Structures are given as structure tokens and as C-alpha cells.
Length: 280
Ligand code: DGL
Image (cartoon, rainbow, N blue to C red):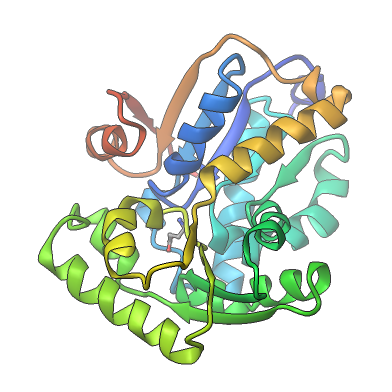
């Protein structure tokens, strides 16, 4: 790395996901903070992360974060629950001090957990996530710290990301798996009154989820929550805010085929996007 990469001029906010899911977060962030510049990076070539080991998720996420830092980003959002669960803490504690202690990496789990306390009335909370996120118990741990009386019930939905990635979120296969997984979660505790969609792909299945979720159960989507939390963070950290450029632009990069990403990504953000290919 050359010296000038450490010079802190203004640069876009980096937003990272294993694939397309993070676009559901970016879309909401851009609604709340439209004046900032953004670089989105999807590691589609190596997605899904949800069934990968701790070590691989950490290694891949670190490579992506370093790449975004090399583009000048001072702030990177891991718009991926799996990466937030498996890699964020190690990157913050072990890697950042050596790379550049003035840079910041934030995840999506903490802001979601902060919010759930306002939403659940009876403290019985369900979590849908990838096998990696559920197995990490990150939500149980964070909710346990913030809302110690809450009971948390996690259920992994290994088919939901492939359904979304294969444009099957409106198909009959989605009905089958969404109903099956909701039944399994509610089977763990019929009193659940709030369910966190703990994977950034899942908002694409929200119509089906609403269809099969028992009445009265709040479905918690992360996009708006993460966006509000980022706005609050930038207001509380003017030194970081000053290093984020404000031109209202957004660039998209993928480790997979750029054309494929642009086609699918446009569905997530509801506008035509043009991605570029990069190698990590
Ligand atoms: N979007 C990622 C998340 O929020 C999961 C996708 C994957 O398995 O790579 O967990």
C-alpha cells in the first residue's frame, strides 16, 4: 500500500455484502442520506457466505473491507448479517488498529437489536437468518446484553437466499419454503410477537413472509433501521462525516459478471444500475 492511500481526503461510504442482499440496505440508506456518495461491493463470485465457515467469511470480508479502504473509504458498512456475525468484531478489534485506526467498519446486527426493544411487547423474539448467522448466536448474545429479559428463538432458512438469488422469490417454491420455515419458528415458541429478518436478502421475500406469518407478529426489516442508525452515527461523529464525500452518487462493483449483477441488482434497488467487475 502506498503512502497516499492513508491521506484522509473525502471519499464515498463503502457498503459491502456477499451478494445482492446488501442492496436492500443501501436502498434505504440512500433514501435517508441521499447527499452522500456510495460504493457498493458485492462478492457474488463467492456468495452465499451463509453456509461457509467462520474462517472463510472472515477472510473474504476482510479482503472486501481492505479493497474499499483502498478506494479511499473511511467508513464501511457490512450490509450483511453473516459478515457482521462472523467477521465484524475481529476486524474492528484485531485488524483495524494495524490497517488504519481512524477508519470505521459498522455492521447491521447492533442497530437491529437496539430497535427490537421498542417493537416487541412480550419479549419473545424470533430470528430468521442464514445457517452461519443463526449458528453464531450473535443475535442471542447481543439481545441478551441489551434486553436481558428477552427470549430469543433463532431459525436458519438455508433456502431463502438461493430463492432470491435465482429470482424465485415470487414463485411457488418460495411459498413452500417460507411457510415451512415460519411454521418451524412459530413451533419453537407460539408467543413470538416480533421476528427479525436477519439476512439482507430476506426483504425480497417479504410479501410471502407477510402472507404466512401469524397475525399480530411484527416483521422487522433492517434497511430503514440501519439507515436511521447510520444517520445518527454520522451526526455523533463529525470527524467521520467530514471524511465522507457528498455528491449523491453510487457506484456498484461485483466480483462476478457485471452484466448479471446489473440486471439482478436493478430489481433490488428499483432503478437501472450499471456495475463493474473487480477481483478481490
Ligand atoms: N445477505 C447475507 C446476510 O445478510 C446472506 C447471504 C449469504 O448467505 O451470502 O446474511
